Length: 229
Ligand code: ADP
Ligand code: AMP
Image 1 (tube, rainbow, N blue to C red):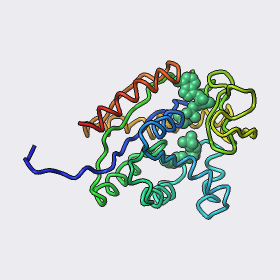
Image 2: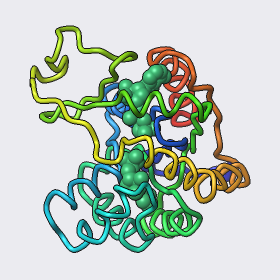
Image 3: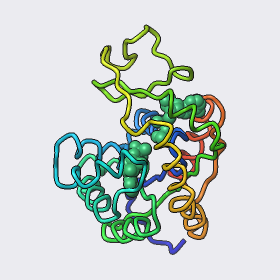
């Protein structure tokens, strides 16, 4: 402590983990509980594809094949989104950064806004279970709430618990072929970020093979500790 008081800056949390680890599911729960904003580069890219922007056109085929979209496109999209006023409540980064170049770009962005990473939380899972999680994933087209054929079923069949919507959709890249490519991309390019954040002293590892609520309880404790110390 240097004896001076520092103004609190909005929390920045990173969720790390392979596709299917539960980052999106847990980010939405944290958003609800703590009021932080979930920033999913996957969601932002899917919106760009749907809107037919230049970034979306460049990303579409790469995403369908399960590869990583170029760092420049993703960093530009993230930079624009994180500058929006709602992010002043704090953010949960879901699916970003995915490469060392992105992690370094995030460091620069945060220095520019006098912010810091409160925790980079690695959701630790077995690859073998991820194929089942991804193959059974679907979301509500209206509000984006995530479901699973076996692990998270709406209370009333076909009706979203969150908004009452009845249109559900599955992702174009949730295919067995693309899952293999995505897991490979994760191990080759994203897993090294675990040591990157360990070296910075902000890494937290949590077991994420248990049921959704159990993971949420552990994660909630980690987030509370990271944002109140
Ligand atoms: P990610 O964002 O990391 O790719 P998701 O949050 O979309 O992963 O989760 C993938 C699928 O697995 C979803 O259908 C979700 O409902 C389900 N799921 C998430 N966490 C768990 C868990 N702890 N146990 C079982 N299924 C889970
Ligand atoms: P997700 O919704 O996080 O599973 O991401 C879906 C797809 O979007 C990924 O397989 C990549 O093709 C792309 N994508 C999302 N985030 C990134 C990122 N940070 N860097 C590169 N590609 C990304």
